[in-house]
Length: 315
Image 1: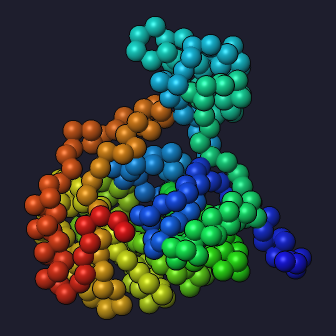
Image 2: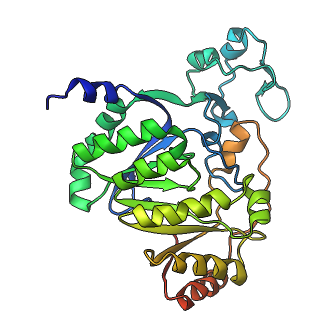
C-alpha cells in the first residue's frame, strides 16, 4: 500500500504507550488488542493502572523479581537506589530518582522496568495488525485505553484513522474528560465507545477521582449525539456509588440522553494493587470489599426500572 506524503507524516506522530495487550475479550466486541496510553486527568482511588495516570516515564520496582545483583545500585548516578536489609531488597528514593532508566538497562531480571514507551502511529498499527485474523473471526479490533486517550489527542486521532484505513474495528475506553476539539474530531472515528459515568454527585466525584464531574457530564451529552454506539460503564465502589440512589441517578441521566440503551455495572476489584507498590505508592482502598452478588443484582434492578439494558461485568 503506497502512502501519500501527508499519510507518511501522520504515521510518524509519536505517542506514549505503556502497554499493548493482546486477546482481550472485555474491552469491546470480539477479540481486541488494547493500546494503553499514559496520562489521565483523573486520580481514581481504585485505579487498576496507576502507571497510566502520569504521562511521564516512571520507574517500577518488583521486589519478587530482584536477584540481588545490585548492578542498579552501582549504576545510579543519583544514588537514588540502595540495598535494603528489611522487607524489600532495594530502597528507591523517589525524591531523588529522575526516572532516567539507566538502572533498567542493567536489570536483567526485570525487577526494574520503565513504564512508558514512545511509539509512532505506524509502529502501533503494525503491532495491532498482527492480530487481524483474530479480528476477522471474532468481529473484534483495536481498543484505545489508558489513562485517558483524549489527553493524547492527535496521537489517538491518527491511530483511529490508520485503523479504519486498514479495515480494523475501533473502540475507546474513556472517562469523557477532554476538550471540545478532541470530542468533535475523535468520536466520529470510533465504532464503539465505552464511557465511564462514576457518580452524579459532584462533591463525591471530586473526593474519589480528584476532579469535578461537570466536564464529563457535558461531554457525555455531546458524545451521545456523535457516537455510532455508546455504552456507559459504572465502576461500583463501596462507600462511593454502590447504593441504589447513586445508580438510579446515573440510570436516569443515561436514559435522558435517548441514544443510549445500555449500562454495564463493573464490580470493584483489587487487580493492580501490586502496581502501587511497584511505584512506591500507597493503595488507599486496600480494606474495601468487592460488592456482593445480591447487591449487584439489586443495583441492576434499578437500571432495568429505567428501561435500560444492564450487564454486570464487562463484555
